[in-house]
Length: 130
Image (cartoon, rainbow, N blue to C red; front, side, top):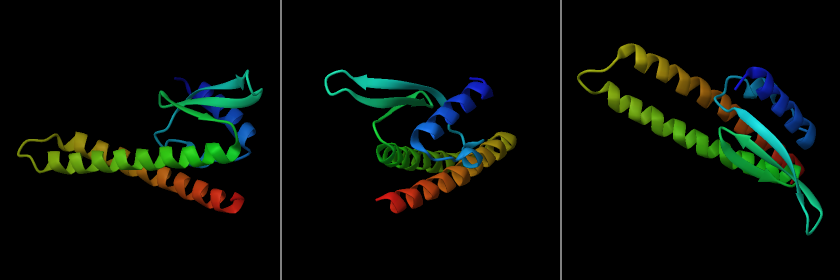
């Protein structure tokens, strides 16, 4: 997906939920693919469907988005930890690609640091609105 579309989805999301996190989302390994407005035809409630990393996050309020995004970040950080452990396992093998290990280690570290900062921001934000 191109960077322009990613930023357009981010801008719409920021407008909807009223939270700006542009600096923290950049190069953190999370991509906003699409965002849709939903209408519950029975209750006439409006909500949103955010497609990020080809997964779906449905929400009807800012607080619901924040809670679900916090859980999404926690799950992502767990995956990054598993990738890190698998990388350490590869590195202990007799034959491994030193350059691949280096680049994967950098990616995991950078994404983990940025996603942890996002998690901290949203947990603090949730604490301020609860």
